[in-house]
Structures are given as C-alpha cells and as structure tokens.
Length: 500
Image (cartoon, rainbow, N blue to C red):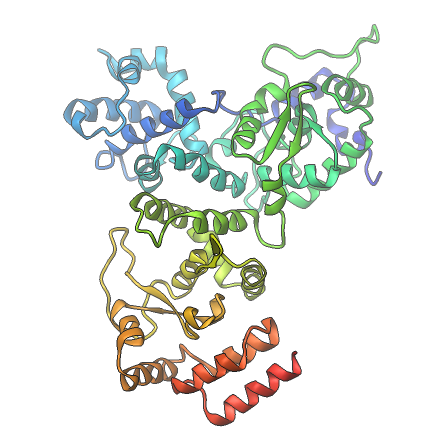
C-alpha cells in the first residue's frame, strides 16, 4: 500500500484528542429524512425567503435579521407566499420580542437555513453575514415537486467544498483553502467504482466525508482507495475495529475507544448518503447495510464531468418540442444553475470534442426516431452568449437573455450531424429566412454568415478529420446553398475518401 493508515493520519493516532478531532472533521449534515416532505420543505423555505427580496441589506444579514425580515414581510405579503406553512409561521415568525424568540428558536432556524445554504439558496459574505440567491430560491418555487429531486441530483454532482456554503462554515472541519478542489459526491461514486465491492457508511464517512488538510480530489481519492483496499472486513463493526486498532485508539485496558452520542461518523454523514440513494446514484442492501453503485451512476463516470453527462440526459428526457411549460422551465433552471460550468465547457476544445463524440456515439432518440439533442443546442447558445451570429437584434426573454435559436448548417432533416460544429445561433428572423426564404434569400443569408466568420470552411474539414461525419450528400447540400465552392467540394470529397 503506497501509504499506511497511520502515515496518512499521523496527527490523529493514539490519543483521545486525535480521535475527537478526526471525527469532528466529518461533514455534519442537517438531518432530515429525504422524502417528498423534505422537497416540500425546501419549497416552503424558498417561498418565505423570496418575500424579503427587496428588504435585505446589500452587505448581507445575519440569520436573526433574516428571521425578523421574513416575519415582517409575512404580515404584509401573505398572499404572495406560494408554499405557505402555518406551522413554520407559528414556530418561527410569531413573537413579541425577536431577541428573546431567537434565543429560543434560533438553533432550529439556523438548522433550516443550513439546508438552504447546502442547496445554494444562501451564501456567506462572512461568518455572520449572509446573502440570499433569489434566482436559486425561485427555482425551488417554480419547479414541480417531482422535478426538484432531479434538480438536486444535478446540483449534488457539482458540489465542491470550496463553494458550498454549508460545508465551508461547519465547525470542526479544517479551514477550506481557496485552491481546494474536492467534489464529495463524485469522489464517492469513483471510489465505489474503483473499490469494486459493496461499501459501508463507516468507510464512506471517514474516508470521503471528512475535510482535513488534504483538499484535492485526486489525493483524497487515492488515500481512500489505499485504505479501502487495506480493510479486510466488509461490515461496519469489523471495519471500525480494524481501523481503531491501527490508529491506536485503544484504552489502557485494551478496549477500543467508543463514540459519544451523535459522534458516529455515519450518523453525521447519513443525510448525504440518503440524498445519493434518493437520487438513484447508490443503492442500499438493507440485509447487511452496505451500499452499491447503480447503473445510472456508472453511466455518469465517463470522460466528461458527471454533472454534464447528467445534464445531457436530463434535458434530452424533457418534452421541449411538445411545448411543456414545466419542462421548459426545468431546462431553464438547470442551465442557469450550471451556467458557469457550461461556459467553461464551451471554451475548452478538448471537452467540446468529447461532448461531440458522445452525441455521435449515442444519438438522442424519441421512440425509434432520431431527435435533436437539446443540450447541444443550449451549449451553442451559451457559446455565442445568446447573440445572433447574423448580427440581428432579437427580443429579451423573461430571464434576461436574448431569444435565439439553434440552426444546423447541414440541416438536421438532411441527416446533418447533431454536433456543436454544425450549429449556428440565430435570431428568429434569419432562422426563418433559412427555412422559409427563396433560394436567393437563403444564399444571401449564408453569404452574410460566411462574411461574419460564423461559417468557415475549416469547420467542415474538422467534421471529417475529427469526427468523420460528413458524406457526399452533405457536400451537395452545402454546395447547393453556396456555402462551399466546386473546388472545396472536391477537396472535402477527397478527405471523406481518405478517412473511409
């Protein structure tokens, strides 16, 4: 084994102080059974937070101030609460003196706000001052309840300790470095795949659910795999005894140290695992209380980030062509939540190649028919920052972005490749012109797009050299629209032959 247990954890061995510090570093999740009631609770909390959108301070508020603001706003705007909860109001929002009430109810209120922080509704400016992400709150309010579980699954795959507000502000864990890069969900899935056996909540919580000075995913995962392969027992009690003995957590009478109430690592980390099970990423064997990786999770562990693979599947499962308002809302919420990640993706040519190859190898199907990949279309819009490549003005959508449409250069109906290289982003007028205009109008628009550099000859060379997706029929289509010349058609035809 590259590193022994004691060498990995040498500052914790042999003493009760080390034992306590080690277990205080386990991510202590708010404990609430994951259920439809939990999803509804998030919708309730989001509804009340939205009430104070115009009342919060620009430099943030503490939780007591947030409680007071919600209480005041509730009296004035009771009719605007979409998901009202009388019990929540009676317990937290009705009082004579805020200071006295917060002393009594503040602990549980902070617990609820912790759940909001974990799922991105609240972010910290400092230890005390918090700001509210009202866009994220609105997502919880506008989505159908059955969609929220899918939404949270996608968020969980992208959780990083350096930007998750709940994790960053937990007491006991090591201070999180600015350059930290650790995704607990992804690491758990990778560990379970590599270890290639059923795992326990003990090993998951101590090996992957702790935050100590090692805060880089590859190092944490390697340490976990080294120790996981060293463990000879496959049940919680056996692993605990083996680990305690190796760490020297032994009393003078040779008995092992014992956990205090609520100190058990699996107890602290349990809610995290409940989430992953509810999302269909892991499954539990109730007979021996061990966890296994699901086929769904295995499909997410590819060359692309898991959250991207998940997003591709979710968006293409939605009924967007059928005009479903709730599904369109779901897509917009997911894109907004992942926008920074998606901007990074479209700026990275290696990732673009991987996503293109993915959709070539696994085309989107609706029943037995090939369908447009809606995720790829959205990536094209993000790539162009929602601006028309023909230079036309368009109107603003409700979310503030420009309304633009994705258009296949080699049309999808002509079996055009459904990859980013073959997509243009156009306002509704030029897009309609390409589909409904005269031959002259169509050629004029293509000429304009070529003059603007939106269509380039090297793109078609790349479609052959990198993906081998062009045919002579495609070349005839491009030639008929004036996109390529006779000479260029001949050159591309030669490439097709050479790549056959």
